[in-house]
Image (tube, rainbow, N blue to C red):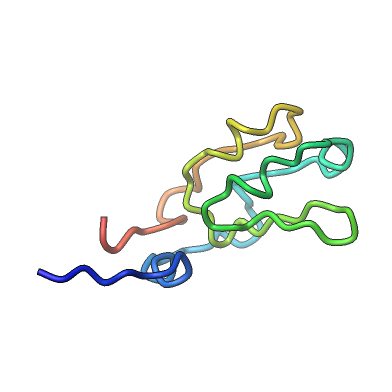
Length: 96
């Protein structure tokens, strides 16, 4: 048996996402995020969906793995709403 080492991008590419356009399951209050000094979301998201551009936090929920790590680590409550996507939407893990 051989084990092939894959990058995070390759592993994430194995998943299938059904994006619920217009109904984000995670909502940020960017004014709270702007005041956050630590910005843990930039380092804890395994899909690297949080980015910092021009001092503002941006988030793309389209590739979310629904792990909830950002919700747990956001101590300043910049994430004002976190819910699982509606039925038939969200991530489908193809290999476990």
